[in-house]
Each structure stands twice: as structure tokens, then as C-alpha cells.
Amino acid sequence: MPKKIVILNGSPRRKGNTSALVKAFTDGAESVGHTVTEFFLDAMNIHGCKGCFGGHSRASALLMAAEGCGFDDVLLYYNHLMEHLKWDNLGHVLAGGNGDIGDIEGKPEVSAAYELGKSIT
Image (cartoon, rainbow, N blue to C red; front, side, top):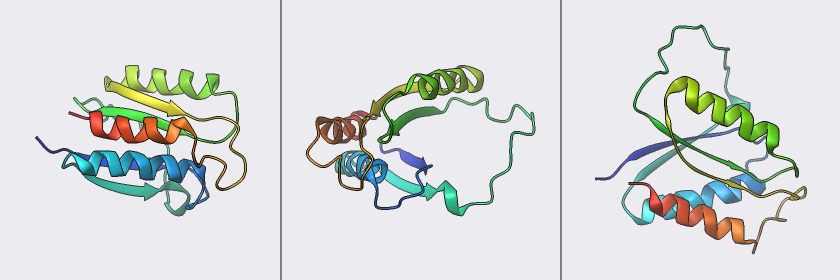
């Protein structure tokens, strides 16, 4: 059954390395019939949690990041968030050491993002 997938892209660069991972994921997801909508968080007026516990649902999530090198803090926060919201973790693609736009091109993480997109059921 096709899914509606929402991507919250926190990268400030719309043509950067994280966006390349998101595009690969989107291509994979759309190749099996899913619909993907992407939002760029840097252009949105977002406010913090209000403590309403409204995020508790049977939703799922995944994580992709392509900057920096150490993702321990990112994964810790992500795993904590998944536990708190009671969401299923469908996977993640982390590609460190990609500082300049285009650094991600040709790296195996791009294929991994595509395959992750295809794997959503």
C-alpha cells in the first residue's frame, strides 16, 4: 500500500549533501509508488514542544545526515525522540565528512538512501 512520506530537511543548503541523500531516498520511495513531500525547516517559523503528548501515534521515522563526522549526539537524540514519541525507527543513513556541496556524489551512502526509500512498506 503506498505511503505518504514527509521529509523535514534541517539543512540550510537546498542543494547540499543532505539534500542529495534526501533526493536519493525520495527517488527510491517514489519508484515503489510512495508520495514524498519535503519541507525545509530553515524557511519555517517553528516553535518548541508544548508538552501536549500529541506526537504519540503509530508513526514511523528515519534519519539522514550528510555533514560533519561525529553523529553520536544526533543518533542519541534521534533514538530518544523515537522512544518518546513511540514511533518506529525505519533506519538511517549517515554520511560524514561532506563539507562542500557535491562531496557526497558517488559515495555508497547515496545508494543506501535510495534503497532505504524503496524499503518503506
